[in-house]
Length: 68
Image (cartoon, rainbow, N blue to C red):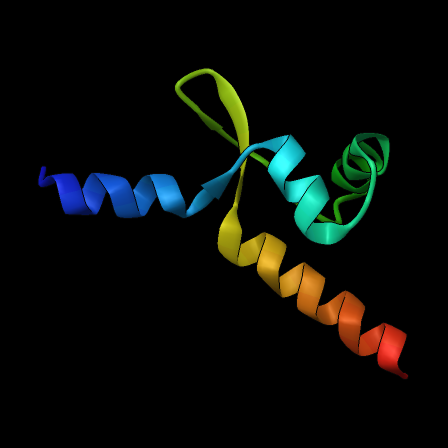
């Protein structure tokens, strides 16, 4: 595996803290959303992470709803 593809994959995942910051919500809200099925986490090497594309899509949807 090349360094470029590994780096790209790492850039495609976010920690819970990064995800909450990107969504402008608290960690507690993030975990409520996970429990409600709003956002699905993944397990990678024993750690819980979120796919950046999913977080970005949810952030976009929230901005659209806020704009009316």
